[in-house]
Length: 427
Ligand code: IMP
Image 1: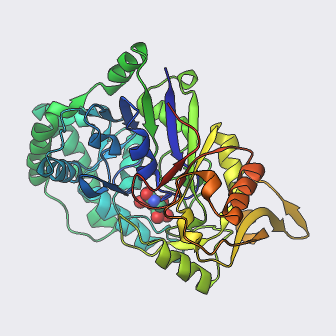
Image 2 (image 1 turned 180 degrees about the vertical axis):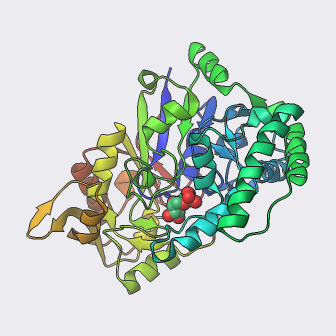
């Protein structure tokens, strides 16, 4: 029996969707544990190209049970839109289960997300405006609405009445924004509940049953550890826990049952939104990486900030999450670079440190120390075995393994499933 978690090892957008898609051919259950439709991954498979935000990529494998855990915040309209696309492609959706305890994104959450961002002025976080922060805020404040509430007319009306009245006071009195209609929201969300009812379950029990039956279970994180609410570059983070602790609280799986944790990292780094990014490259290099790596957000279309592989941050991610293997994605994006860089330390005043700080002030005052290596300047797209990679690429990857102290199990050299080098089987 194996429970394998796949988490983001950088600031999100590492290509987890492709790695999860690759691994699901061997999985029996795929469970997503946090975030919402702020995440987005593009999956290219024989059915076509899909831009998914909420539904785990496991849905494309006909035998896999897919779970959206209690730690996820669900925008029901977005979920229904994704289900419609899947149905159009004749992909079975009967195996998708959404936790009844998952919180729901309501119409005022994206509005408040945007208004709060505007009010932050120069210190805005650069959120996705999907209402993620406000929805988790309401969850923590114990006023949120959960999937199960959508299934009961009376409970929904009573909880919505309380919530909409409070939010309308906030919208009109603080933000000078027109109020929203309780009646419209109620009818809309009741209808969402009706449509999603066949999928709403106690997903923890489904997982427990899978554990008892020794099934192969894949836990799928969204975003990345460096955006973790507790361990990321606070306050420039998302409002959930992409790190491994989030898998336990976001699914109800006991920590000791998670045997393997894989961190997905790009062969370079990107970040969307504001906040510390020590290895951000100067314009010309960043531009090249962005163009070749198509580094524009799946969710917002925003241009991603681009830079070099940060081995200090990667080692922090490995330590924090107990990572036992890495997946390095988008190696091919570096194919044309004459020189490739790995950040091995941070210079802070006169000293070089090799650890990550939780203080914003420190983050902003450090500069990266790089190890420069010759690039391979040839295409890796067709390569399917590590030994067939150009020597310089092998050296680059081995050096990452050495500094980060973790073996690389998978190397991705293109968006398609087959454009992968598998060095270690996972299940
Ligand atoms: P929020 O999650 O929309 O509240 O945004 C908070 C921060 O997390 C912003 O910097 C976003 O750009 C970033 N973020 C949220 N989701 C993703 C993602 O899927 N990939 C990369 N960055 C993300």
